[in-house]
Image (cartoon, rainbow over all chains, first blue to last red; front, side):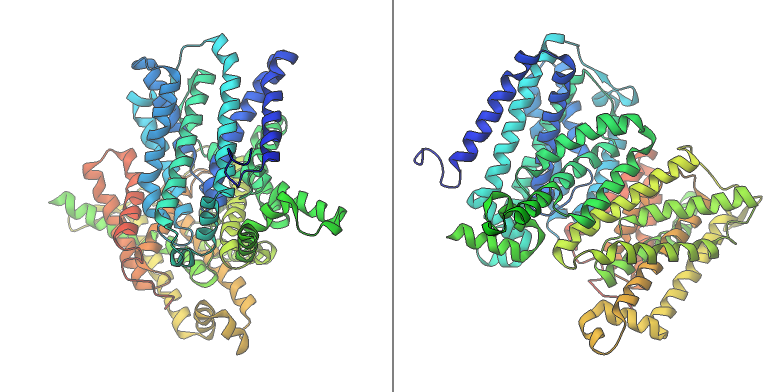
Length: 345
Length: 291
Protein backbone atom coordinates (compact mmCIF):
# COMPACT_ATOMS: atom_id res chain seq x y z
CA UNK A 1 0.00 0.00 0.00
CA UNK A 2 2.71 2.40 1.10
CA UNK A 3 4.59 1.97 -2.12
CA UNK A 4 1.65 2.65 -4.42
CA UNK A 5 0.32 5.67 -2.57
CA UNK A 6 2.14 8.93 -2.05
CA UNK A 7 3.13 9.36 1.61
CA UNK A 8 0.53 12.07 2.28
CA UNK A 9 -2.45 9.84 1.54
CA UNK A 10 -3.80 8.09 4.60
CA UNK A 11 -4.89 4.55 3.74
CA UNK A 12 -7.62 4.80 6.35
CA UNK A 13 -9.18 7.86 4.72
CA UNK A 14 -8.94 6.21 1.34
CA UNK A 15 -10.74 3.10 2.54
CA UNK A 16 -13.45 5.14 4.27
CA UNK A 17 -14.13 7.24 1.17
CA UNK A 18 -14.09 4.17 -1.08
CA UNK A 19 -16.60 2.44 1.20
CA UNK A 20 -18.88 5.49 1.27
CA UNK A 21 -18.65 5.77 -2.51
CA UNK A 22 -19.51 2.10 -2.94
CA UNK A 23 -22.56 2.46 -0.71
CA UNK A 24 -23.70 5.55 -2.60
CA UNK A 25 -23.15 3.76 -5.89
CA UNK A 26 -25.44 0.84 -5.07
CA UNK A 27 -27.92 2.85 -3.03
CA UNK A 28 -30.28 3.76 -5.94
CA UNK A 29 -30.52 0.10 -6.94
CA UNK A 30 -31.67 -0.70 -3.40
CA UNK A 31 -34.18 2.06 -2.63
CA UNK A 32 -35.51 2.75 -6.13
CA UNK A 33 -37.12 5.97 -4.92
CA UNK A 34 -37.12 8.61 -7.67
CA UNK A 35 -37.46 11.54 -5.25
CA UNK A 36 -34.41 10.57 -3.22
CA UNK A 37 -32.55 9.71 -6.38
CA UNK A 38 -33.04 13.27 -7.57
CA UNK A 39 -32.18 14.74 -4.17
CA UNK A 40 -28.98 12.75 -3.99
CA UNK A 41 -27.95 13.77 -7.49
CA UNK A 42 -28.52 17.42 -6.63
CA UNK A 43 -26.54 17.01 -3.42
CA UNK A 44 -23.62 15.35 -5.16
CA UNK A 45 -23.47 18.14 -7.71
CA UNK A 46 -23.65 20.70 -4.89
CA UNK A 47 -20.78 18.93 -3.14
CA UNK A 48 -18.60 19.17 -6.23
CA UNK A 49 -19.31 22.89 -6.63
CA UNK A 50 -18.81 23.64 -2.93
CA UNK A 51 -15.45 21.87 -2.92
CA UNK A 52 -14.34 23.68 -6.06
CA UNK A 53 -15.28 27.02 -4.55
CA UNK A 54 -13.37 26.12 -1.40
CA UNK A 55 -10.06 25.64 -3.24
CA UNK A 56 -10.05 29.36 -3.86
CA UNK A 57 -12.10 30.68 -0.97
CA UNK A 58 -10.70 28.36 1.67
CA UNK A 59 -7.26 27.16 0.68
CA UNK A 60 -6.15 30.48 -0.76
CA UNK A 61 -8.42 32.74 1.27
CA UNK A 62 -9.72 34.42 -1.88
CA UNK A 63 -13.49 34.45 -1.48
CA UNK A 64 -15.37 34.51 -4.76
CA UNK A 65 -18.83 36.04 -4.93
CA UNK A 66 -19.15 35.36 -8.64
CA UNK A 67 -18.47 31.70 -9.23
CA UNK A 68 -21.80 31.36 -11.01
CA UNK A 69 -20.03 33.00 -13.97
CA UNK A 70 -17.96 29.88 -14.61
CA UNK A 71 -20.83 27.56 -13.73
CA UNK A 72 -23.15 29.28 -16.19
CA UNK A 73 -20.55 29.58 -18.91
CA UNK A 74 -19.76 25.89 -18.62
CA UNK A 75 -23.44 25.03 -18.76
CA UNK A 76 -24.17 27.04 -21.87
CA UNK A 77 -21.02 26.06 -23.74
CA UNK A 78 -21.63 22.38 -23.01
CA UNK A 79 -25.28 22.74 -23.96
CA UNK A 80 -24.57 24.63 -27.18
CA UNK A 81 -21.94 22.10 -28.24
CA UNK A 82 -24.37 19.24 -27.77
CA UNK A 83 -27.36 20.94 -29.35
CA UNK A 84 -25.74 22.72 -32.31
CA UNK A 85 -22.56 20.77 -32.94
CA UNK A 86 -23.59 17.29 -31.82
CA UNK A 87 -20.57 16.84 -29.57
CA UNK A 88 -20.89 13.86 -27.20
CA UNK A 89 -21.87 14.79 -23.65
CA UNK A 90 -18.68 14.03 -21.76
CA UNK A 91 -16.48 15.71 -24.37
CA UNK A 92 -18.74 18.75 -24.24
CA UNK A 93 -18.42 18.91 -20.45
CA UNK A 94 -14.64 18.74 -20.60
CA UNK A 95 -14.29 21.39 -23.31
CA UNK A 96 -16.76 23.61 -21.44
CA UNK A 97 -14.80 23.09 -18.25
CA UNK A 98 -11.51 24.05 -19.88
CA UNK A 99 -13.06 27.18 -21.39
CA UNK A 100 -14.61 28.13 -18.04
CA UNK A 101 -11.24 27.62 -16.35
CA UNK A 102 -9.52 29.82 -18.93
CA UNK A 103 -12.23 32.44 -18.47
CA UNK A 104 -11.53 32.43 -14.73
CA UNK A 105 -7.87 33.03 -15.50
CA UNK A 106 -8.64 35.98 -17.75
CA UNK A 107 -10.08 38.08 -14.94
CA UNK A 108 -8.64 36.24 -11.97
CA UNK A 109 -4.99 36.31 -12.96
CA UNK A 110 -4.62 40.10 -12.67
CA UNK A 111 -6.79 40.48 -9.56
CA UNK A 112 -5.21 37.59 -7.66
CA UNK A 113 -1.81 39.23 -7.98
CA UNK A 114 -2.81 41.86 -5.49
CA UNK A 115 -2.91 41.51 -1.76
CA UNK A 116 -6.11 42.04 0.05
CA UNK A 117 -9.68 41.95 -1.11
CA UNK A 118 -9.29 43.00 -4.75
CA UNK A 119 -10.16 39.58 -6.03
CA UNK A 120 -13.35 39.30 -3.97
CA UNK A 121 -14.63 42.69 -5.08
CA UNK A 122 -13.78 41.93 -8.68
CA UNK A 123 -15.82 38.73 -8.50
CA UNK A 124 -18.97 40.73 -7.72
CA UNK A 125 -18.45 42.59 -10.97
CA UNK A 126 -17.50 39.50 -12.93
CA UNK A 127 -20.65 37.69 -11.92
CA UNK A 128 -22.85 40.60 -12.89
CA UNK A 129 -21.04 41.46 -16.12
CA UNK A 130 -21.00 37.84 -17.27
CA UNK A 131 -24.70 37.50 -16.61
CA UNK A 132 -25.47 40.64 -18.61
CA UNK A 133 -23.26 39.75 -21.54
CA UNK A 134 -24.53 36.20 -21.73
CA UNK A 135 -28.15 37.26 -21.46
CA UNK A 136 -27.68 39.36 -24.59
CA UNK A 137 -25.51 36.79 -26.35
CA UNK A 138 -28.44 34.98 -27.87
CA UNK A 139 -26.42 32.67 -30.09
CA UNK A 140 -24.73 31.06 -27.12
CA UNK A 141 -27.40 31.13 -24.45
CA UNK A 142 -30.68 31.58 -26.27
CA UNK A 143 -31.16 34.89 -24.48
CA UNK A 144 -33.67 35.31 -21.69
CA UNK A 145 -35.77 32.43 -22.97
CA UNK A 146 -32.91 30.03 -22.38
CA UNK A 147 -31.80 26.83 -24.04
CA UNK A 148 -33.36 23.40 -24.14
CA UNK A 149 -31.50 20.15 -24.48
CA UNK A 150 -33.20 16.96 -25.62
CA UNK A 151 -34.84 15.24 -22.65
CA UNK A 152 -33.58 11.70 -22.08
CA UNK A 153 -35.21 10.02 -19.14
CA UNK A 154 -32.82 7.09 -19.06
CA UNK A 155 -29.81 9.41 -19.18
CA UNK A 156 -31.19 11.54 -16.38
CA UNK A 157 -31.36 8.44 -14.20
CA UNK A 158 -27.81 7.44 -15.07
CA UNK A 159 -26.43 10.89 -14.44
CA UNK A 160 -26.51 10.09 -10.73
CA UNK A 161 -23.36 8.02 -11.12
CA UNK A 162 -21.69 10.76 -13.14
CA UNK A 163 -22.47 13.17 -10.29
CA UNK A 164 -21.00 10.70 -7.83
CA UNK A 165 -17.83 10.49 -9.90
CA UNK A 166 -17.70 14.28 -10.15
CA UNK A 167 -18.02 14.68 -6.38
CA UNK A 168 -15.36 12.03 -5.79
CA UNK A 169 -12.92 13.69 -8.17
CA UNK A 170 -13.55 17.03 -6.46
CA UNK A 171 -12.99 15.42 -3.07
CA UNK A 172 -9.76 13.80 -4.26
CA UNK A 173 -8.51 17.15 -5.58
CA UNK A 174 -9.54 18.79 -2.30
CA UNK A 175 -7.54 16.20 -0.40
CA UNK A 176 -4.52 16.54 -2.64
CA UNK A 177 -4.58 20.33 -2.58
CA UNK A 178 -4.45 20.27 1.20
CA UNK A 179 -2.32 17.27 2.12
CA UNK A 180 0.26 17.07 -0.63
CA UNK A 181 3.40 19.23 -0.60
CA UNK A 182 1.44 21.49 -2.93
CA UNK A 183 -1.05 22.02 -0.10
CA UNK A 184 1.72 23.25 2.15
CA UNK A 185 2.72 25.73 -0.51
CA UNK A 186 -0.89 26.96 -0.75
CA UNK A 187 -1.01 27.37 3.02
CA UNK A 188 2.18 29.35 2.90
CA UNK A 189 0.76 31.63 0.20
CA UNK A 190 -2.39 32.17 2.22
CA UNK A 191 -0.51 32.97 5.41
CA UNK A 192 2.12 35.25 3.96
CA UNK A 193 2.81 35.75 0.27
CA UNK A 194 6.18 37.38 0.86
CA UNK A 195 7.44 34.70 3.18
CA UNK A 196 6.21 32.06 0.76
CA UNK A 197 8.17 33.74 -2.01
CA UNK A 198 11.27 33.78 0.19
CA UNK A 199 11.22 30.02 0.56
CA UNK A 200 10.76 29.50 -3.15
CA UNK A 201 7.00 29.09 -3.49
CA UNK A 202 5.74 30.63 -6.72
CA UNK A 203 2.50 32.27 -5.65
CA UNK A 204 1.63 33.38 -9.17
CA UNK A 205 1.76 29.92 -10.70
CA UNK A 206 0.03 28.12 -7.86
CA UNK A 207 -2.75 30.67 -7.53
CA UNK A 208 -3.39 30.43 -11.25
CA UNK A 209 -3.40 26.66 -11.08
CA UNK A 210 -5.97 26.62 -8.28
CA UNK A 211 -8.06 29.26 -10.02
CA UNK A 212 -8.04 27.24 -13.24
CA UNK A 213 -8.94 24.01 -11.46
CA UNK A 214 -11.74 25.73 -9.58
CA UNK A 215 -13.12 27.40 -12.69
CA UNK A 216 -12.85 24.22 -14.71
CA UNK A 217 -14.68 22.14 -12.12
CA UNK A 218 -17.38 24.80 -11.99
CA UNK A 219 -17.66 24.64 -15.77
CA UNK A 220 -17.98 20.86 -15.78
CA UNK A 221 -20.60 21.09 -13.03
CA UNK A 222 -22.47 23.64 -15.13
CA UNK A 223 -22.33 21.24 -18.07
CA UNK A 224 -23.66 18.49 -15.86
CA UNK A 225 -26.47 20.75 -14.66
CA UNK A 226 -27.46 21.49 -18.26
CA UNK A 227 -27.58 17.80 -19.13
CA UNK A 228 -29.46 16.92 -15.98
CA UNK A 229 -32.18 19.55 -16.17
CA UNK A 230 -32.39 19.72 -19.98
CA UNK A 231 -33.33 23.40 -19.70
CA UNK A 232 -31.13 26.28 -18.63
CA UNK A 233 -31.55 30.06 -18.78
CA UNK A 234 -29.06 32.84 -18.02
CA UNK A 235 -30.98 34.46 -15.15
CA UNK A 236 -30.79 31.24 -13.18
CA UNK A 237 -27.40 29.90 -14.31
CA UNK A 238 -25.54 33.18 -13.73
CA UNK A 239 -27.84 34.31 -10.94
CA UNK A 240 -26.60 36.04 -7.84
CA UNK A 241 -28.37 33.46 -5.69
CA UNK A 242 -26.28 30.73 -7.30
CA UNK A 243 -23.03 32.53 -6.51
CA UNK A 244 -24.15 33.00 -2.92
CA UNK A 245 -25.05 29.33 -2.61
CA UNK A 246 -21.42 28.35 -3.30
CA UNK A 247 -20.23 30.78 -0.63
CA UNK A 248 -22.79 29.57 1.85
CA UNK A 249 -22.05 25.87 1.43
CA UNK A 250 -18.40 26.58 2.14
CA UNK A 251 -19.12 28.78 5.12
CA UNK A 252 -21.63 26.39 6.70
CA UNK A 253 -19.28 23.45 6.45
CA UNK A 254 -16.11 25.32 7.28
CA UNK A 255 -14.04 27.22 4.75
CA UNK A 256 -10.56 25.90 4.19
CA UNK A 257 -11.24 22.42 5.51
CA UNK A 258 -11.10 19.34 3.28
CA UNK A 259 -14.52 17.81 3.80
CA UNK A 260 -16.31 20.74 5.45
CA UNK A 261 -17.81 22.22 2.27
CA UNK A 262 -19.10 18.78 1.27
CA UNK A 263 -21.01 18.55 4.54
CA UNK A 264 -22.07 22.17 4.09
CA UNK A 265 -23.46 21.25 0.68
CA UNK A 266 -25.56 18.45 2.15
CA UNK A 267 -26.97 20.78 4.80
CA UNK A 268 -27.51 23.53 2.26
CA UNK A 269 -29.47 21.36 -0.15
CA UNK A 270 -31.65 20.08 2.68
CA UNK A 271 -32.16 23.62 3.92
CA UNK A 272 -32.96 24.99 0.48
CA UNK A 273 -35.42 22.25 -0.35
CA UNK A 274 -37.32 22.49 2.94
CA UNK A 275 -37.05 25.94 4.48
CA UNK A 276 -36.46 28.03 1.38
CA UNK A 277 -39.12 26.23 -0.62
CA UNK A 278 -41.64 27.17 2.07
CA UNK A 279 -40.57 30.81 2.35
CA UNK A 280 -39.22 31.75 -1.07
CA UNK A 281 -39.53 35.48 -0.34
CA UNK A 282 -37.15 35.18 2.60
CA UNK A 283 -34.27 33.21 1.09
CA UNK A 284 -31.83 36.12 0.67
CA UNK A 285 -32.34 37.24 4.25
CA UNK A 286 -32.01 33.70 5.55
CA UNK A 287 -28.77 33.24 3.60
CA UNK A 288 -27.56 36.54 5.01
CA UNK A 289 -28.44 35.73 8.61
CA UNK A 290 -26.81 32.34 8.25
CA UNK A 291 -23.61 33.97 7.00
CA UNK A 292 -23.62 36.49 9.85
CA UNK A 293 -24.23 33.91 12.56
CA UNK A 294 -21.71 31.38 11.33
CA UNK A 295 -18.99 34.00 10.89
CA UNK A 296 -19.65 35.57 14.27
CA UNK A 297 -20.01 32.47 16.38
CA UNK A 298 -18.20 29.67 14.57
CA UNK A 299 -16.05 30.97 11.70
CA UNK A 300 -15.11 27.42 10.79
CA UNK A 301 -18.70 26.32 10.49
CA UNK A 302 -19.67 22.75 11.28
CA UNK A 303 -16.06 21.61 11.24
CA UNK A 304 -15.24 24.15 13.95
CA UNK A 305 -18.24 23.03 15.96
CA UNK A 306 -17.19 19.40 15.63
CA UNK A 307 -13.68 20.17 16.84
CA UNK A 308 -15.03 22.15 19.78
CA UNK A 309 -17.30 19.28 20.84
CA UNK A 310 -14.49 16.78 20.36
CA UNK A 311 -12.21 18.84 22.56
CA UNK A 312 -14.77 19.14 25.30
CA UNK A 313 -15.67 15.45 25.23
CA UNK A 314 -12.12 14.17 25.13
CA UNK A 315 -9.80 16.80 26.60
CA UNK A 316 -7.18 14.11 27.13
CA UNK A 317 -6.74 13.84 23.38
CA UNK A 318 -5.42 17.37 23.13
CA UNK A 319 -5.46 18.98 19.74
CA UNK A 320 -4.94 15.93 17.62
CA UNK A 321 -6.87 14.13 14.98
CA UNK A 322 -7.66 15.14 11.45
CA UNK A 323 -10.45 17.60 12.21
CA UNK A 324 -8.39 19.56 14.71
CA UNK A 325 -5.58 19.80 12.25
CA UNK A 326 -7.89 21.09 9.58
CA UNK A 327 -9.52 23.57 11.89
CA UNK A 328 -6.24 25.03 13.00
CA UNK A 329 -5.40 25.93 9.44
CA UNK A 330 -7.56 28.71 8.09
CA UNK A 331 -8.13 30.78 11.21
CA UNK A 332 -4.73 32.28 11.85
CA UNK A 333 -1.23 32.36 10.55
CA UNK A 334 -0.15 30.71 13.77
CA UNK A 335 -2.46 27.79 13.07
CA UNK A 336 -0.98 27.41 9.64
CA UNK A 337 2.49 27.43 11.14
CA UNK A 338 1.46 24.71 13.58
CA UNK A 339 0.29 22.48 10.81
CA UNK A 340 3.43 23.06 8.86
CA UNK A 341 5.48 22.00 11.84
CA UNK A 342 3.46 18.87 12.24
CA UNK A 343 3.74 17.98 8.59
CA UNK A 344 7.48 18.57 8.77
CA UNK A 345 7.78 15.97 11.50
CA UNK B 1 -18.76 68.13 -31.84
CA UNK B 2 -21.91 69.06 -29.97
CA UNK B 3 -22.32 65.48 -28.92
CA UNK B 4 -18.82 65.38 -27.49
CA UNK B 5 -19.38 68.48 -25.32
CA UNK B 6 -22.70 67.03 -24.17
CA UNK B 7 -21.01 63.86 -23.09
CA UNK B 8 -18.08 65.67 -21.49
CA UNK B 9 -20.40 67.82 -19.37
CA UNK B 10 -22.49 64.86 -18.30
CA UNK B 11 -19.31 62.97 -17.44
CA UNK B 12 -18.20 65.79 -15.14
CA UNK B 13 -21.60 65.93 -13.48
CA UNK B 14 -21.65 62.17 -13.02
CA UNK B 15 -18.16 62.23 -11.54
CA UNK B 16 -19.42 64.20 -8.54
CA UNK B 17 -21.81 61.40 -7.66
CA UNK B 18 -19.16 58.73 -8.18
CA UNK B 19 -16.70 60.55 -5.94
CA UNK B 20 -19.19 60.80 -3.08
CA UNK B 21 -20.15 57.17 -3.56
CA UNK B 22 -16.56 55.99 -3.46
CA UNK B 23 -15.34 58.15 -0.62
CA UNK B 24 -17.20 56.26 2.09
CA UNK B 25 -15.77 52.95 0.92
CA UNK B 26 -12.24 54.39 0.77
CA UNK B 27 -12.56 55.97 4.19
CA UNK B 28 -13.55 52.74 5.90
CA UNK B 29 -10.92 50.75 4.08
CA UNK B 30 -8.26 53.34 4.83
CA UNK B 31 -8.93 53.40 8.55
CA UNK B 32 -10.22 49.94 9.42
CA UNK B 33 -8.63 47.93 6.58
CA UNK B 34 -12.03 46.41 5.95
CA UNK B 35 -13.92 46.41 2.68
CA UNK B 36 -17.44 47.34 3.60
CA UNK B 37 -19.39 45.06 1.29
CA UNK B 38 -22.52 46.45 2.87
CA UNK B 39 -21.69 49.69 1.04
CA UNK B 40 -23.89 48.52 -1.82
CA UNK B 41 -26.66 47.70 0.61
CA UNK B 42 -26.53 51.16 2.16
CA UNK B 43 -26.59 52.82 -1.26
CA UNK B 44 -29.77 50.91 -1.95
CA UNK B 45 -31.17 51.70 1.52
CA UNK B 46 -30.45 55.43 1.05
CA UNK B 47 -32.27 55.41 -2.26
CA UNK B 48 -35.33 53.73 -0.75
CA UNK B 49 -35.29 55.97 2.34
CA UNK B 50 -35.43 59.06 0.14
CA UNK B 51 -38.10 57.53 -2.09
CA UNK B 52 -40.23 56.51 0.88
CA UNK B 53 -40.04 59.93 2.55
CA UNK B 54 -41.00 61.52 -0.73
CA UNK B 55 -43.82 59.14 -1.54
CA UNK B 56 -45.30 59.12 1.96
CA UNK B 57 -44.80 62.65 3.22
CA UNK B 58 -43.89 64.56 0.09
CA UNK B 59 -40.52 65.56 1.50
CA UNK B 60 -38.18 66.82 -1.17
CA UNK B 61 -35.38 64.29 -1.69
CA UNK B 62 -32.73 66.97 -1.22
CA UNK B 63 -34.21 67.93 2.15
CA UNK B 64 -34.24 64.34 3.32
CA UNK B 65 -30.50 64.07 2.67
CA UNK B 66 -29.73 65.21 6.20
CA UNK B 67 -32.06 62.90 8.18
CA UNK B 68 -31.23 59.96 5.93
CA UNK B 69 -27.48 60.46 6.36
CA UNK B 70 -27.88 60.89 10.11
CA UNK B 71 -29.88 57.69 10.36
CA UNK B 72 -27.38 55.83 8.19
CA UNK B 73 -24.60 57.10 10.45
CA UNK B 74 -26.33 55.51 13.43
CA UNK B 75 -26.90 52.31 11.47
CA UNK B 76 -23.19 52.23 10.63
CA UNK B 77 -22.15 52.71 14.25
CA UNK B 78 -24.54 49.95 15.32
CA UNK B 79 -23.23 47.56 12.65
CA UNK B 80 -19.71 48.27 13.82
CA UNK B 81 -20.46 47.87 17.52
CA UNK B 82 -22.64 44.83 17.09
CA UNK B 83 -20.84 42.90 14.38
CA UNK B 84 -17.61 44.20 12.90
CA UNK B 85 -15.91 44.82 16.24
CA UNK B 86 -16.12 41.13 17.09
CA UNK B 87 -14.02 40.06 14.13
CA UNK B 88 -10.31 39.40 14.41
CA UNK B 89 -8.04 42.00 12.85
CA UNK B 90 -5.51 41.08 10.22
CA UNK B 91 -5.48 38.60 7.37
CA UNK B 92 -8.00 36.14 8.80
CA UNK B 93 -10.41 38.94 9.67
CA UNK B 94 -10.29 40.10 6.04
CA UNK B 95 -12.16 37.11 4.69
CA UNK B 96 -14.51 37.06 7.65
CA UNK B 97 -15.40 40.73 7.41
CA UNK B 98 -16.15 40.30 3.70
CA UNK B 99 -18.50 37.42 4.40
CA UNK B 100 -20.11 39.07 7.41
CA UNK B 101 -20.84 42.38 5.70
CA UNK B 102 -22.01 40.52 2.62
CA UNK B 103 -24.51 38.81 4.92
CA UNK B 104 -25.73 42.18 6.19
CA UNK B 105 -26.18 43.29 2.59
CA UNK B 106 -28.27 40.20 1.79
CA UNK B 107 -30.50 40.89 4.79
CA UNK B 108 -30.99 44.50 3.70
CA UNK B 109 -31.81 43.39 0.16
CA UNK B 110 -34.37 40.92 1.38
CA UNK B 111 -35.90 43.58 3.62
CA UNK B 112 -36.22 45.88 0.62
CA UNK B 113 -37.87 43.15 -1.44
CA UNK B 114 -40.38 42.49 1.33
CA UNK B 115 -41.14 46.14 2.05
CA UNK B 116 -41.09 47.66 -1.42
CA UNK B 117 -41.33 44.66 -3.83
CA UNK B 118 -38.85 44.10 -6.63
CA UNK B 119 -40.29 46.73 -8.96
CA UNK B 120 -38.19 49.58 -10.29
CA UNK B 121 -38.87 52.86 -8.48
CA UNK B 122 -38.04 56.47 -9.25
CA UNK B 123 -38.28 59.67 -7.27
CA UNK B 124 -40.37 62.05 -9.36
CA UNK B 125 -40.34 65.70 -8.36
CA UNK B 126 -41.82 68.67 -10.23
CA UNK B 127 -38.32 69.65 -11.35
CA UNK B 128 -37.27 66.14 -12.35
CA UNK B 129 -37.84 66.87 -15.99
CA UNK B 130 -36.64 70.45 -16.01
CA UNK B 131 -33.46 71.21 -17.90
CA UNK B 132 -31.18 74.17 -18.40
CA UNK B 133 -29.09 74.93 -21.43
CA UNK B 134 -25.38 75.18 -21.04
CA UNK B 135 -22.99 75.78 -23.93
CA UNK B 136 -25.70 74.66 -26.29
CA UNK B 137 -26.38 71.44 -24.37
CA UNK B 138 -29.51 70.73 -22.38
CA UNK B 139 -28.83 69.33 -18.96
CA UNK B 140 -31.26 68.44 -16.23
CA UNK B 141 -31.46 70.57 -13.10
CA UNK B 142 -31.16 67.44 -10.99
CA UNK B 143 -27.75 66.61 -12.36
CA UNK B 144 -26.48 70.03 -11.40
CA UNK B 145 -27.98 69.81 -7.94
CA UNK B 146 -26.41 66.39 -7.37
CA UNK B 147 -23.08 67.67 -8.59
CA UNK B 148 -23.20 70.73 -6.33
CA UNK B 149 -24.16 68.70 -3.27
CA UNK B 150 -21.45 66.16 -4.01
CA UNK B 151 -18.87 68.94 -4.23
CA UNK B 152 -20.05 70.41 -0.92
CA UNK B 153 -19.91 67.03 0.79
CA UNK B 154 -16.41 66.32 -0.48
CA UNK B 155 -15.24 69.76 0.60
CA UNK B 156 -16.75 69.29 4.05
CA UNK B 157 -15.05 65.91 4.34
CA UNK B 158 -11.73 67.36 3.31
CA UNK B 159 -12.05 70.08 5.95
CA UNK B 160 -13.14 67.56 8.55
CA UNK B 161 -10.15 65.35 7.92
CA UNK B 162 -7.56 68.10 7.71
CA UNK B 163 -8.78 70.88 10.00
CA UNK B 164 -10.37 69.24 13.01
CA UNK B 165 -9.11 67.15 15.91
CA UNK B 166 -11.49 64.39 14.97
CA UNK B 167 -10.05 64.34 11.46
CA UNK B 168 -6.54 64.30 12.81
CA UNK B 169 -7.46 61.39 15.07
CA UNK B 170 -8.99 59.49 12.17
CA UNK B 171 -5.89 59.98 10.06
CA UNK B 172 -3.65 59.03 12.96
CA UNK B 173 -5.59 55.80 13.55
CA UNK B 174 -5.34 55.02 9.85
CA UNK B 175 -1.55 55.31 10.10
CA UNK B 176 -0.96 53.44 13.34
CA UNK B 177 -3.67 52.40 15.77
CA UNK B 178 -1.20 51.07 18.36
CA UNK B 179 0.60 54.36 18.75
CA UNK B 180 -2.77 56.09 18.97
CA UNK B 181 -3.70 53.97 21.96
CA UNK B 182 -0.43 55.00 23.58
CA UNK B 183 -1.13 58.71 23.25
CA UNK B 184 -4.72 58.38 24.37
CA UNK B 185 -6.73 58.43 21.16
CA UNK B 186 -9.90 56.40 21.74
CA UNK B 187 -9.23 54.02 18.84
CA UNK B 188 -12.39 51.98 19.20
CA UNK B 189 -14.53 55.12 19.17
CA UNK B 190 -12.71 56.42 16.10
CA UNK B 191 -13.33 53.09 14.36
CA UNK B 192 -17.03 53.27 15.17
CA UNK B 193 -17.27 56.89 14.03
CA UNK B 194 -15.41 56.16 10.80
CA UNK B 195 -17.61 53.20 10.05
CA UNK B 196 -20.66 55.35 10.69
CA UNK B 197 -19.30 58.14 8.51
CA UNK B 198 -18.58 55.78 5.62
CA UNK B 199 -22.02 54.22 5.92
CA UNK B 200 -23.68 57.65 6.00
CA UNK B 201 -21.80 58.62 2.83
CA UNK B 202 -23.04 55.47 1.12
CA UNK B 203 -26.66 56.26 1.99
CA UNK B 204 -26.22 59.88 0.94
CA UNK B 205 -24.77 58.82 -2.40
CA UNK B 206 -27.59 56.34 -2.81
CA UNK B 207 -30.18 59.04 -2.27
CA UNK B 208 -28.41 61.34 -4.71
CA UNK B 209 -28.31 58.55 -7.27
CA UNK B 210 -32.00 57.87 -6.70
CA UNK B 211 -32.87 61.37 -7.87
CA UNK B 212 -31.23 60.55 -11.21
CA UNK B 213 -31.79 56.86 -11.84
CA UNK B 214 -34.41 54.25 -11.19
CA UNK B 215 -33.59 51.63 -8.60
CA UNK B 216 -34.74 48.31 -7.15
CA UNK B 217 -33.53 46.13 -4.26
CA UNK B 218 -30.60 44.90 -6.36
CA UNK B 219 -29.41 48.48 -6.77
CA UNK B 220 -25.99 48.95 -5.24
CA UNK B 221 -24.02 46.01 -6.67
CA UNK B 222 -22.76 47.91 -9.71
CA UNK B 223 -22.40 51.01 -7.55
CA UNK B 224 -20.21 49.12 -5.11
CA UNK B 225 -18.03 48.00 -7.97
CA UNK B 226 -17.80 51.52 -9.36
CA UNK B 227 -16.88 52.83 -5.92
CA UNK B 228 -14.21 50.23 -5.74
CA UNK B 229 -12.84 51.16 -9.16
CA UNK B 230 -12.61 54.78 -8.03
CA UNK B 231 -10.90 53.82 -4.76
CA UNK B 232 -8.35 51.69 -6.59
CA UNK B 233 -7.76 54.36 -9.21
CA UNK B 234 -7.56 57.27 -6.85
CA UNK B 235 -5.83 55.86 -3.82
CA UNK B 236 -7.30 55.79 -0.36
CA UNK B 237 -8.86 58.80 1.18
CA UNK B 238 -7.24 61.46 -0.94
CA UNK B 239 -10.08 63.80 -1.87
CA UNK B 240 -8.29 65.08 -4.97
CA UNK B 241 -7.33 61.57 -6.06
CA UNK B 242 -10.90 60.37 -5.58
CA UNK B 243 -12.23 63.27 -7.63
CA UNK B 244 -9.83 62.64 -10.53
CA UNK B 245 -10.50 58.91 -10.45
CA UNK B 246 -14.26 59.50 -10.42
CA UNK B 247 -13.86 61.78 -13.42
CA UNK B 248 -11.89 59.13 -15.29
CA UNK B 249 -14.47 56.44 -14.59
CA UNK B 250 -17.38 58.70 -15.50
CA UNK B 251 -15.69 59.80 -18.72
CA UNK B 252 -14.84 56.26 -19.78
CA UNK B 253 -18.40 55.14 -19.06
CA UNK B 254 -20.10 58.03 -20.76
CA UNK B 255 -17.96 57.87 -23.88
CA UNK B 256 -18.31 54.11 -24.06
CA UNK B 257 -21.90 54.76 -25.09
CA UNK B 258 -20.56 55.97 -28.42
CA UNK B 259 -18.90 52.67 -29.18
CA UNK B 260 -20.74 49.98 -27.25
CA UNK B 261 -24.31 48.73 -26.92
CA UNK B 262 -25.95 50.02 -23.74
CA UNK B 263 -26.01 46.74 -21.84
CA UNK B 264 -22.24 46.45 -22.15
CA UNK B 265 -21.49 49.78 -20.49
CA UNK B 266 -22.02 48.07 -17.13
CA UNK B 267 -18.94 46.00 -17.84
CA UNK B 268 -16.82 49.01 -18.78
CA UNK B 269 -16.02 49.98 -15.21
CA UNK B 270 -14.95 46.47 -14.50
CA UNK B 271 -12.67 46.24 -17.50
CA UNK B 272 -11.14 49.54 -16.40
CA UNK B 273 -10.55 48.08 -12.94
CA UNK B 274 -8.73 45.06 -14.31
CA UNK B 275 -6.65 47.24 -16.64
CA UNK B 276 -5.64 49.55 -13.81
CA UNK B 277 -4.79 46.63 -11.56
CA UNK B 278 -2.57 45.19 -14.25
CA UNK B 279 -0.83 48.42 -15.21
CA UNK B 280 -0.65 50.19 -11.84
CA UNK B 281 -1.45 47.88 -8.93
CA UNK B 282 -0.92 50.70 -6.43
CA UNK B 283 -3.53 52.93 -8.02
CA UNK B 284 -2.85 55.82 -10.35
CA UNK B 285 -1.43 57.99 -7.61
CA UNK B 286 0.22 55.38 -5.44
CA UNK B 287 -1.06 54.39 -2.04
CA UNK B 288 -1.57 57.42 0.10
CA UNK B 289 -3.51 57.08 3.29
CA UNK B 290 -6.06 59.79 3.97
CA UNK B 291 -5.46 63.47 3.71
